[in-house]
Length: 162
Image 1 (cartoon, rainbow, N blue to C red):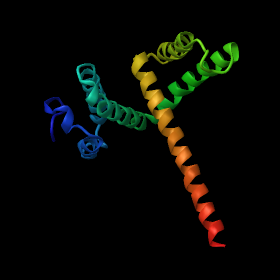
Image 2 (image 1 turned 90 degrees about the vertical axis):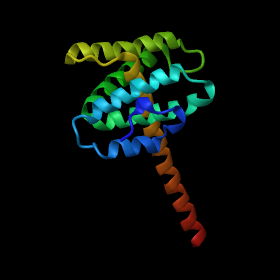
Image 3 (image 1 turned 120 degrees about the vertical axis):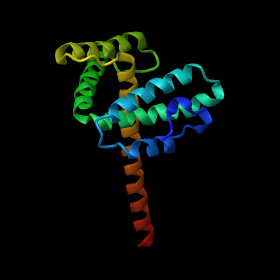
Image 4 (image 1 turned 135 degrees about the vertical axis):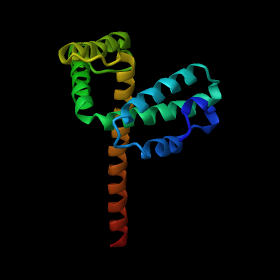
């Protein structure tokens, strides 16, 4: 198995990670490897040119989704806390729109993770947890939209066949 630290940006792809993780998917080392790879890619992103940033961001997005799938119960709980704070922000400050105070919104979301860490005696990194939440939320929304589109296309084809 290739070591991520020895690869150039051109050699890294989602397919690389699929192959990398397939062999150890049931291992206890899987989550540690994911976290290590995410950290390495974040460093690469900081030091990369703009032309490579998109590929690195895509890999980071993919790895963050895989992270949630390794600890679904834990992430479901922390995501619930984040959603609760997002709802509280909207209740107190109105629906989020272009004119919203996003710094204050961020503080609400940060508070959810801080309180979660305190309550459960864990130490989730605030920035990375919000990145994981964002990646997974976008992934799930896209997935649900695609299911809707597939169903709509099937219905349309059925209507045309009649």
